[in-house]
Amino acid sequence: MARFYHKCYFCGGKVSEKKINVDYRWGEDLITVFKNVPAGVCQVCGEQYYKAEIVKKMERSAKSKEKAKEFIRVPVRELQVT
Ligand SMILES: [Zn+2]
Image (cartoon, rainbow, N blue to C red; front, side, top):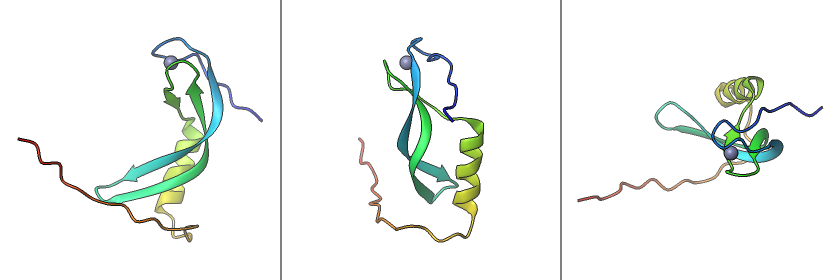
């Protein structure tokens, strides 16, 4: 069943649901990548909206001990700015 999304808060554009990949961050060093997350995406400016139930699901899954589908290596860099 399709979830309902309000018009874009920023530009008033139409928001429709798409499956996107999300880099979900929790704590300082922990990142979980979720694939195929249903989110509302503004067709004009691209702003993304998540339903509370989806955010909760990601939160639960990120903290759970369930085995990840795969692991990726992520480079960590420090930006040298003068
Ligand atoms: Zn928008």
